Length: 124
Image 1 (spheres, rainbow, N blue to C red):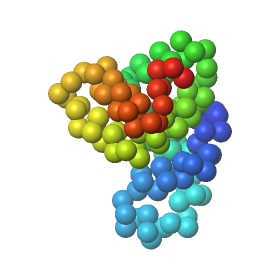
Image 2 (image 1 turned 45 degrees about the vertical axis):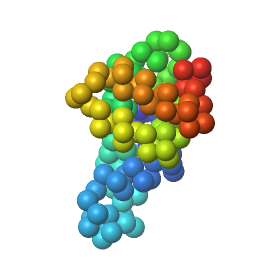
Image 3 (image 1 turned 180 degrees about the horizontal axis):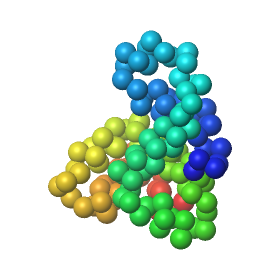
């Protein structure tokens, strides 16, 4: 991911800000974009979120199934997560952590996304 332009995507600016505690965010808001570890922080945050949501083999499996590069899969995942987040479903899926397996959590999120009109990620 670091070799791609993904960490430079303006959409992920909030990911960088969210990494820091609120007092630091507020005090250094104008300097966050020039932080020397900006790309690494964004990449780590996004990948950690993807692993928390889809499991440790999610990116690998989709790469094998689609032949797409990791950065392309990650962009698609970010778009899908944006639709799910609006409905508050991702938080509900995370609340299931430790009580149901990852496949069941993914199924809940996919079904809820379809029910809320964000599309059927299984067909994309």
